[in-house]
Image 1 (cartoon, rainbow, N blue to C red):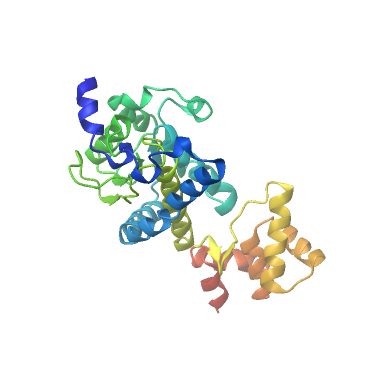
Image 2: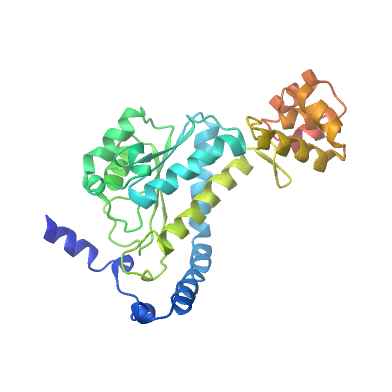
Length: 304
């Protein structure tokens, strides 16, 4: 088994030594940091090349969520943590149901804070973890694996395809010789890491950028943003309550006190408050317009 793994990883770009940093251990602190920064500058350019594939991924996610489905990120190690992080940020930022967008990491949530080596090698666990969530054909699964070979992630994607759920595979190596055929493949090729095999670095950064793009763009397409402001945030903390007031002030020109009054009248819902102020309607009419517009503020404001 170990020889098989050796054969799999020996040709992976993410496992290859980087000629640009060959003697990094002999450099000064400043030079080490400059070398890391130089490699980091390559990331956004490579991510840009994958935008056509990211578009397809966003469209799948939007279609799934509109149809009552759910979004699952699944990965091991750094990849798994990044998926959990992105999913965890959606409820406070965009007001999503935590059950609609969630992250799954090999080994369970305890591995978020303490690495547990070996859990990524269990092919069947990926399937089992999705079964526990009652995955169905309306859902979409985003598998995240820098190397493209992580057994846990491949097992999850294989099961998702078996039950006809939509699949997106995000990894940081060339996309040839895939064992499975996901609906969408997103594979920025970033070159070798500064430290060979340390995919928490360039690969992890690229994955974070792409997950940001997938979720943020999907939320915009679902009406969670008006102009460039998060109008569906949940004011469940003092900071978010004050951010809600500031958003209302920016979009309506009201002062702090009046923004607070309207936010309270609107049950803490920014969208509802905006309709009440800008369209000069009562709470009931604001709710009616938002329902008709599927939550899109711009369309609700244009409603006559």
